[in-house]
Image (cartoon, rainbow, N blue to C red):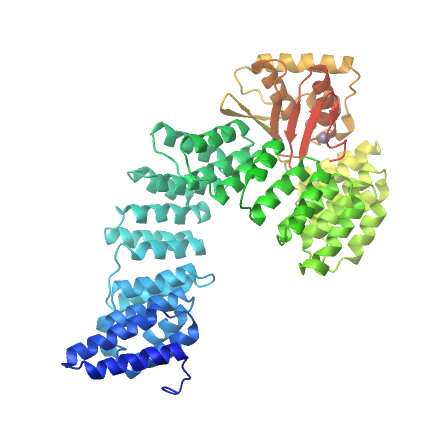
Length: 617
Ligand code: ZN
Ligand code: ZN
């Protein structure tokens, strides 16, 4: 026993040795203190549990070292390393603590406390609290204080708070420090509307290293401002700044969002050329990019070459295969993952369930869904229930889907209801579809897609007067449809077209090409699907308007600018409409082109007049 606390053997041995040494070499008071101090520092250095820490705390008090700056600082950093900063801070800043200690508190000590809180989940406000406490103790921040304070602000995501800290660091003259600038860029990017402030800091910084560029590019990529992320990366290349793996991961995520396969491939060769270390994160980002930009075989190849894989590597490739309608391969990969004893997480289950859904594997889907809780103790979330409803709906099992929803232990969300309505529409269960759509509109009156669903049902029933009423309802509520748009990458540039787009300087030729395409596919047997037409178009415009959907404009544009036979890859922001789907099938056959379209939900590989989704999407 020592000071009322049971001590473990090694500490007791070390301490008794220290005290013996103390007794042997006591030439003066100073060296005695020095030895005690060294002993405590050594003990703290090898301390690896909270129990050890409390024992050492007792020793510190016993030896009267509670006001020794070196010991206090080491004690604080050890607490921080043990994720127990609250232990040190409650002792350091307790009201009962001797005021004579206050003079010992310096910026280094505060930085340790602030850093520890900034790194602990749910403790960001505590970090800011200690930043304030620092001033009340008369301690001024140094240039190392601000990166931690800014990190806490980033975690909180409050722009005004961030601006205040920015103001004070300018006052202390730390705004020239590179590390401070980089964390400021990161902080502003994490504060919603702060990205313009981030850009301002970026523009004013000397940009000497890749970290600054990564911070800004990563900020744009995370906010979904992918065009800007890619643009800035190009600028970085022009300036001759060499990228590191972190920058590449950020740019790859922007490529994935844009569907920019060519740029993605270029990045892969850049990594090889510049011998950038291929971290697991970088490999995973490459796999995800290839899978989501339409080259799932390349994604698979990279996946197979990886010597060390994480759950993210597995899920990226499983989700990728699922999106491409290669459900059986996705499922066998999932099984292989389990065999290799990689524990699946809830994202992996979303991947495998959507693979079953897109490939009509109803029994397999049930099997995996049931195994979640039974074998892996993962409680299904609304997304997993959604996958199951989607699976049953796509398989045409509308009644089973409804029963499944009724038995669900959680409330179904709007996405689940919308899958059922789409299934009703596809299977001719119009009455049921109509009643669910009306319920949805009542519960979610400002969601325009609900009106579109109801309107499409009336169109299928040829109930034009009811369809017009829906349109009037939308007008009354001042709702507008999300404009459809399609992106295409050509010669290292991204082009975006909206429905009826005439902004491109090749516009005249594009529309001539579309007319020609229309004539050619009609000759081959294509019939326009007018019932699915956009709500805001008058009856007589229907057929004409269908020709102007953005994917058709993008296809015509790429026909004009690529040699015959080149595969075409498009990214559409909405679900592909029935008519565009049918037209693209004919176009792929008549013009002998492979056309890959990524829509909001999945990939469609059009080749020789058929689509990989087997007309179910
Ligand atoms: Zn369309
Ligand atoms: Zn398709």
